[in-house]
Image (cartoon, rainbow, N blue to C red; front, top):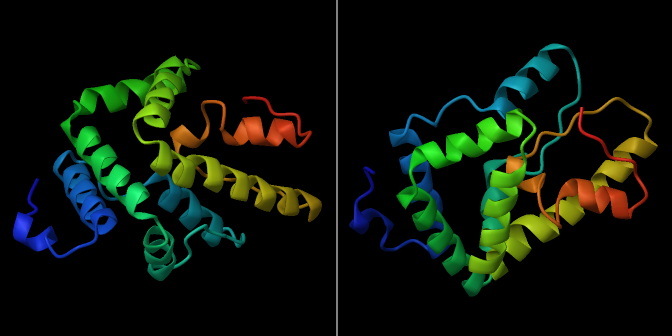
Amino acid sequence: NGVAIEDIDPLRPWLAAHTIGEASDESRGWGGETAENVIAAAALQAGKEVRSEFAFQEDIIEWFGRMTAQQSLEFMRFTLDEILAPGSDEIAKFDAWARGDTKPATDWIANARRAYPAFYEATLIKRNRDWVARFDSVVSEKKNAIAIVGLYHLVGPDSIQENLSRMGFKVRRV
């Protein structure tokens, strides 16, 4: 994937995993312009406020840096497992989601919960709960808003929608 072992050897596991994952995405042609970047740019051009969980590169580093040793190790295992999986599997999950079929992504998230419990706790359960609290404050401001999150935050028992439903919000797919 274009990353030499000597380049990542001195890195903490989470940073090595991030580096390897980014290189893999680039080699598969998945790097570059993300939906988040395109939508955020359009919002800014329209004069809308844009907020981000990780407004600066330092925020990402700080978040990953707070991972426990177990979470960091599981992130490395997760990354390697994702790299070794056929790219067509990932594309199929997103295509199914676009058709309204949540089963492939839900199955994937159930497997991730079993295989990487500490990493799952940090990246899905805690982040989804934190986001829902922020969504509640946005709603109280009575402003139009859009939240852009990854697919895996939208499926399973710990999804954003499940958290919102537990708070009393009515959630529906549009």
